[in-house]
Length: 479
Ligand code: ADP
Figure 1 (tube, helix red, strand yellow):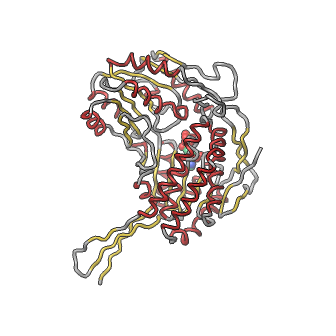
Figure 2: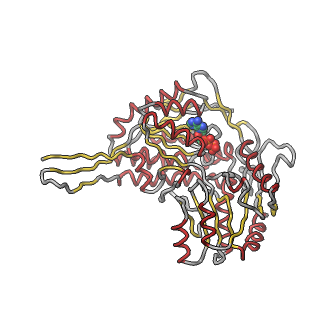
Figure 3: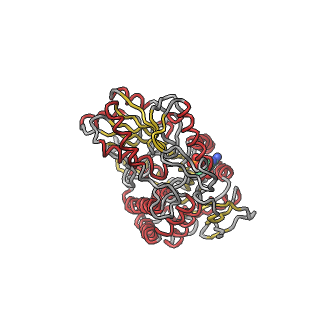
């Protein structure tokens, strides 16, 4: 089994203490490969390299930076099958979905190759005739990116592309469950010819790497995607050096179907928003509010569609629902189902996991539909990160908006209606950063992605996504 290396200052290196992390396949339990388990020493070296490279990289022209990104974009497309296969092996998502993610990941590189050349400053009319006011946008400095395992490629490029486009240099720490996809992307960065030190990658002890990054003044910006819990720790640590931070944290998305919805579209949207990546998505619908008069029909339709899902190893033909990433995620999802059932929920479909079916090394769970769900259940409060659809009913628009907004999370919300007026009213009333109106999959490189409340800070994607990597400098000129 292959041992991979980390990438610092244009060199592939092993961990100094030779310790390694074993990466396993969540579908089979087999070893996929080994990556270095590094800590403070290597992280410091990566920051040194990024810091040394910053001066020259930040003063290249936007057009030069765009050209490197275009190269990376084409390399990602050329290598999409290989990266996707690696992703399926270490992350579990079905191969077709993994290919889709690589295309999505490449989309961010393409978008920011274009946006690199659209970072504009301002000239503001001054109040004194002998003064001129210029506003410049400049790269913020060395950026650290800490990324999660659920989208091992896209969560890297969504940060890397705008940071490099803006003129920043980077240190990236991928999740320990899915570091090989990240290493393959680094390999393509090397092939794209980015100068040494511009991008660096370390794998290893999250806590130690995190602390090293957060306490180092030279790192001027942290961009993080992961749990709200870790996001809060990092936000606290950022105070020490007043680092700029962008956080993409957890969600608890409501999905609402009004009685004037096109029910078939609502069912398709519900499944798209819930079952992608086996529900391990921060924008996944977690609570399904269906208006009273259509709730029975909705349940019947979802049930019949769930029968078409095939759970298994994502490399096998026909499998469209992979395993959960690991035992802790599996246990949490099972706990949510158990708690709901204990409090009176009815399992309309699924509910069984591979543990109940006998000892397989994979962490599989059937797609599960629950009815008779009530607001006091755990599943209504915590992010599930699994293929479970808890259905509740509601009476009025006013009531459902209040229930939908009654959470500390504020990432994504979805609703279905054929009424134009309602679509405007409800989209304005929902306290969420992303609202899908008759759309179960709104994520795209062109649009700003991010949350209200405890779901995060800042936006990724769109022309907004580059802002977090830029400082605003006011230059006052007296003539
Ligand atoms: P998840 O629940 O999706 O695994 P985490 O927030 O635990 O989300 O992980 C997201 C990323 O944050 C991963 O790369 C993980 O290694 C990293 N991480 C976890 N704990 C810390 C920490 N204390 N400091 C810095 N990074 C951390």
